[in-house]
Length: 311
Image (tube, one colour):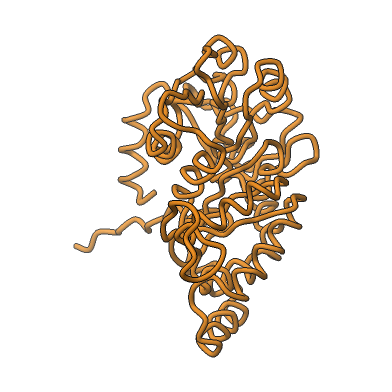
C-alpha cells in the first residue's frame, strides 16, 4: 500500500524567484563574464548608485557580506576596545560578532514584547560612560522605534546605527530602513528579500568621509592598487553579486507587497487560533515581512506537527 508523502513547503523558494526573472538574471551574469571584471568594477558601482538612490542616502559601499558590513561600519566609526555598544539580544550572531571583532563590548537591552525590537527605555537604562553607539536591529523586517532611539542618542552624545540586514524596502514614517541613522549595515544573503547569488553586503550612509574610509577598509586599506594607507582587509563585493542585485532591485517593492499580502492572509486565516499570536506591526512602520513570525504557547509541539506535514 502506497503512502502519501506530504509535499515539502520550503521557507523560501529561490528557484521560483529565479524562473520569474530568468532572462534578466542571465543577461546580468553574462555581462560580467563578457566584461571579465569580477571584483568591484562597473557592475558593483552601478548597484551602489542604484541602491543608495533607492534608500534615499548619498552613499552605498558594497561589501563581501552583511557580517563584514556590521564589523567595518563600527570600525570605520572608531569603535574599539573599551567601548560599549548597546544592542538587542534577539538577533542573529553577526550583530554581536561585529561588535566583538572591534574589541568592543556588546551590552544587551531587552526588547519590546509587541515587536521583539530593541526597547528604547531599556536601551536608555543600559547607557554608561563607556557607551559609544546604539545598534538596533530591524528584526524580521520591521524597523525599530528610531525616533525614540535617535532622541536618546542625541541626548547622550552617542552614535545611532542600524542593523538593516532583514529590512530591505521597509519603511519607518515614510523613510526607508537603512536611512535612519548615521550608517546602516545591510545583508544580501541569498534568502533575504533582496538576495545575491552568494554572500554580499553593504553599508549605507550620508557621511562622505565614512564612506571613503569604508572603501579603503574593504580594499586592503588603500584608495588605489598597491597603496595601503590604513590597515584593511579584502572585503570587496563580487561583480556577479552587484549585477544580480541590480537585476533584482526593480522587483523588490513588488515582492515586498506580495509578502505583506501573504502576511495579512495568514493573520486572517489564523485569527483566534488558541495559543497563537503574532509580532505586532506598529502604525508608523511598514515591514517587508522578511519573516512572518508566529508565537505559540506549545511551540515545539506545533513545530513537530508542521514538519510532519512537510512545512
